[in-house]
Length: 108
Image 1 (cartoon, one colour):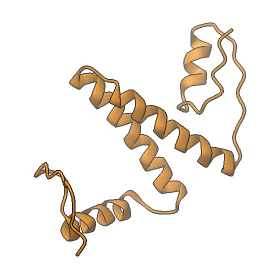
Image 2 (cartoon, helix red, strand yellow):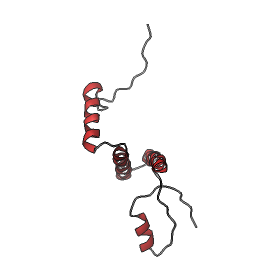
Image 3 (cartoon, helix red, strand yellow):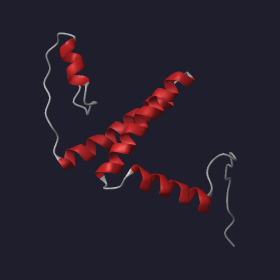
Image 4 (cartoon, helix red, strand yellow):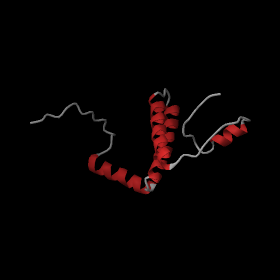
């Protein structure tokens, strides 16, 4: 019997049940939930870094977005607020579209 011990999407128990399999779950407390969301984001990032196709990369990016949206909600901010913060950072510091790679900065 495979052991997972990880946060899964809300419909996974239904999917497992519909496949005629039995499983065990538990609901996490708030601290565990934050910890597991962060671990899940790292898991999805690792999966993204190991993708070989655009299709797979996009799937992993979508997974990361879902986790980021959930984390934003858990931190008490809306997606609109998160997006406004992102836009303000782009306005002040720019984005990453120009592909600039900083080599060094001389200290005088």
